[in-house]
Length: 368
Image 1: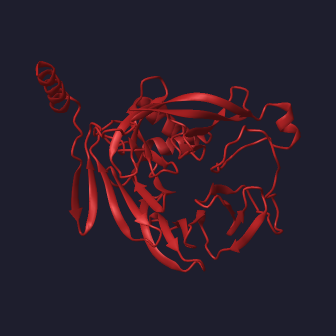
Image 2: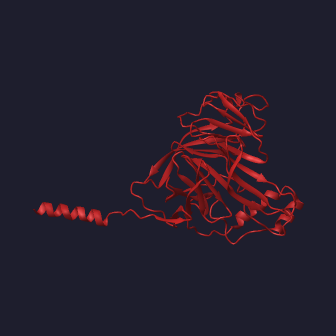
Image 3: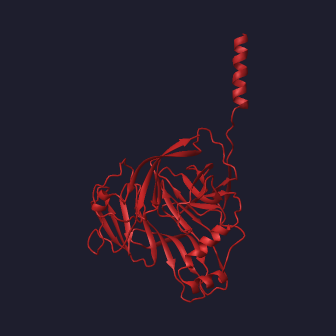
């Protein structure tokens, strides 16, 4: 009987004094679910909240064997769902105007069906993972900086609408098109100041779109910390909202921002007079997703080590579950094209002191 009583006491202590799973705050706005996240992460039972990085291999463009195959520069890359050791296998999608060729350096990504999409100059190519050309699509879209082929046949594009007058704003829009590139819907937008404006805010005015698990995620630096989630037909199905800490622009940030104009002394002097910096920076700089639907959001909060920033980690339901201090991975506050996360691997392009670039591949070890 005493042993039974002790067992009941131990179980009671475990149940009532052990870690509790927090109730996630969710509200409805105009028929859309909003996941409300706060400054501190939610404690979700069994949910990994952070990770460590363990280097696996490096693709170094300074290596002679890589230079011999003609790979001397990397501007963008894509990662499929298969394992790899980083060895060169083959080359395809050459520069040119012929079948399977593109006029300039392409933007690349793998679709969720493991088809490699490459886009440049109003031309979109889809390849098998082994490089076999599947199809070629010529678009009628002008002033687009990228296109993504969705698994339902629609296309997600970032369109830039330049002003007709110097006094008008430039508009960057995330647009959804059907398989014939007929417009379906505008998903998000951001407007930048005209160059003739008396004062210009010293931020990047970033607009973002990521695709994962049949969903489209969009965000803008002209909103609060709020990320929209759409399905592939353009229906808004969720908003991910988070409280955040206001971060004032540091002197380092200001110098780095103005440094973009230093190559032209007269432009630099004019920029110093025209550009003003807000009392606080936007809530986040950029975000990216993995194939499981997690979100990794780079904030402007300083990280643990020099050059690092705090990244907020959201699970596939849009719940803030943890943080990780990582490098900024961007140059002059521009959006990075040089990071991918897939299959619990972290890939990024790094510039060496010699000026050569390399792709560094890490294994992500998740921790609860």
